[in-house]
Image 1 (tube, rainbow, N blue to C red):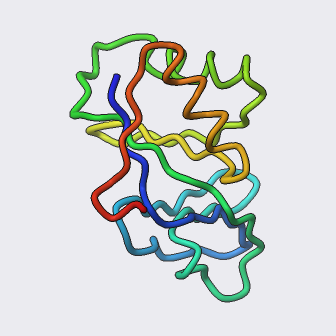
Image 2: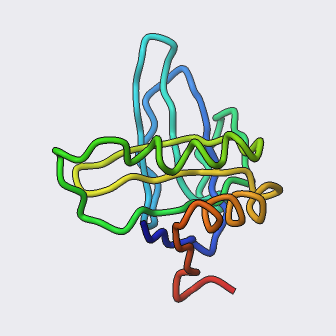
Length: 125
């Protein structure tokens, strides 16, 4: 599979109240029994949220058919073997994998060794 690496760092945040989705190519606001989760560029972190920054985003080239199986497994298994944590999100069209920036090169190496291609977005340095 081909994955695009976004240039800017992202944050994953939590808050006890609803949060508006952030800007950018990936923006998510989710709710579960534990509260609200926000994912977006570090530069747009919501005020008052508790955040963990420094995540890098890999976008799976899509659109992906709903009938496909094993997409996330094929991508996360090599990273698990390399000790790279993953925060995954899916949309109608594709999957997004967030990896800690300090583990980005290990993630890239694991994915490449497993036969996947990681390309920088046109904005990535």
